[in-house]
Amino acid sequence: MSNIIKVDDLDVIIEGRGEETIVMIHGWPDTYRLWDNQVEVLKDKYRCVRFTLPGYELDSDRRMYSLEDIIAKINSVVDAVSDGKPVTLLLHDWG
Image (cartoon, rainbow, N blue to C red):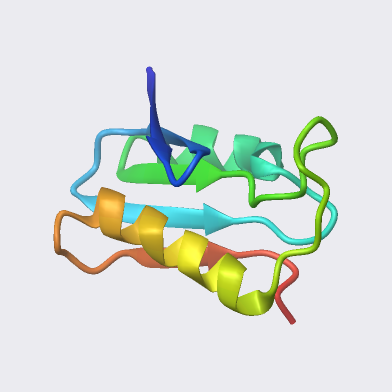
């Protein structure tokens, strides 16, 4: 079962029932769907959080976003889902 919340105009998908939260951040040119298989494996033990960064969906605003903009979006998501606790960031293609 998944829950979708809005954070800064982003759809944030939350799946899983664990105490620890993993925030999954895709790279270029992917979307949140990159993490489908990992969520299936991890959701029994972890709370998996994923979203598509702004500008990555083909039907979204395709303008350029600065690194500061992207970091602010990630921070907003982490703040919204962390309940003040540490989270694990799982990143793909961030060099």
